[in-house]
Length: 92
Image (cartoon, rainbow, N blue to C red):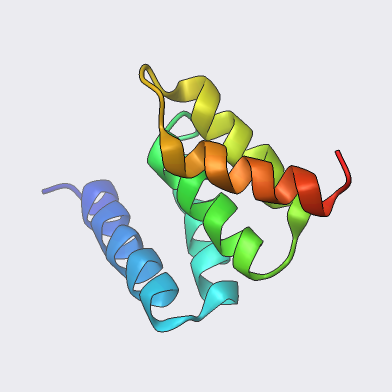
């Protein structure tokens, strides 16, 4: 493995562990870093949108869930659900 792939794998594990433990700030920061490495990864957009939803950052949640929807080739219920919640919270 290269140093970049090792860094990516460690960041990936850390991001998912952070969200699983409820550390939303760390999860958000780590998913943002992962998206800098892979800006078109729909799963990272969804997960960042999820972390932002739990943090009540509705604009960011909506933006990342909508991006996950754009990147998906099939209908994904979870990102549509979270986008709808965020849009409702924003009165949109």
